[in-house]
Length: 216
Image (cartoon, rainbow, N blue to C red; front, top):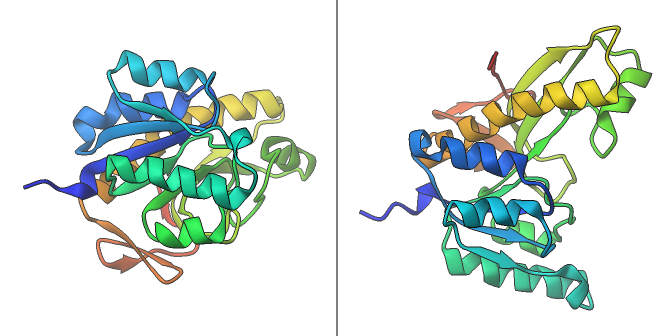
């Protein structure tokens, strides 16, 4: 039986290190990456996909006069792959409300902070500036609120006195590369769902900070 749940499309804009982690894990992870879509034709992640014989599509946002038109073109590109899940992996475009509604409960994003703290950009420096002792990474469902969808899982790291933004970014990336494939597998296995603004894992309502993963 063709289980669409297991078919994943990954959206990227750049290097695609999370894409690589997702590809590396996909054999063990019960999901398959059906396609990779980028809004930039020179994104290195496209080469990663091609090396693994995964089909790619470029939807260049500069070729569309409005965000709505870009979103429509992106939807068409996604729908050709018939995915059960859309994974944002360093995709640097804000998705419009209609787009998000269309794929409600089927879009995941990863964010380099312990949401709901530090939404937005430049999180590593902001965490340092605030003198935080803990930092981390969150995987969440994408809803219309930027970085505001319900958190599915988090992994935290200690902030050391010697850390700078670069060292924190490196530590966070290592955690991302375990956490993201893990959550994708949960979804592929039908264990994860979004209901309204609540995330459920194995039919249990996840707390606001999601499942705490220790991927060390």
